[in-house]
Image (tube, rainbow, N blue to C red; front, side):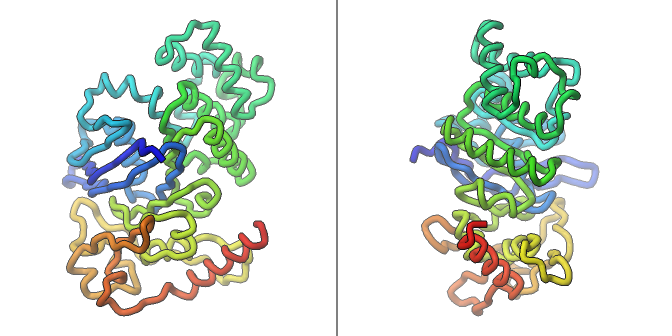
Length: 348
């Protein structure tokens, strides 16, 4: 499959009164045409900053891309001017933001907002742009599209507004679609509909998708691969099955254990102890060591490299070193994996 994106050692920092925050610290991954990569992790892990760097939306000042490459379709986006990025943003790379109400202009009709990108990036006439907007509204599952084009964002429900935002993102047939927590503010039923919609649209358009979320539970049915981020780094990456059924990093164990179980029976919900580190002064060694009950002495002294588990699966943990003691995932994680496998067999 053709590679459309190759991120190499990406570093993003922000100047603050307290010092320089190293928000993204050497992130590397690639993405193929038609593939969905989910980036998961707690708030503050660097997921959204990474996505905004891909879009050229890091505000400078106080932020800047301080190192690395973002090679998209053969071009290094970090070398492009803001004017050049404007021609790519929306046309070749589009983004679905977390809160649709901050993405939509309350003073413009939904139709005009969708048409705006078509006229600017595609050079369409108003008549053709209007017809395309009707098709897009229909594509994302909003009934009576002709009438809906004349309405304003406040006349739509939360789920419908998110569908409008998706329609806007799809307007110019982007090669890469970045979805930043697109279902966080929606109830579970609407969330499922939006995720199903994105899968369906991807089949029709063959676009690549980066799906950003703090919720590992929504990933299983939408992603091909998963990258787990912690403290500005990718600590584990692999296929969905590898991350869910054969996780290797203690932080991934914690995320899996934190997922609510459909089976019930637990006295209390598991939570990862402690808090993420201060990225003004990142800790020496493994950034997760202070929160890791399975931490080794070396975790506090040296940063682990990415160890290869398989051709598609890598994890940055000293537990994978040949000389490391054999440490199994905690019982709560093993139980969760058994539940997920049982659920898959039962067609849940």
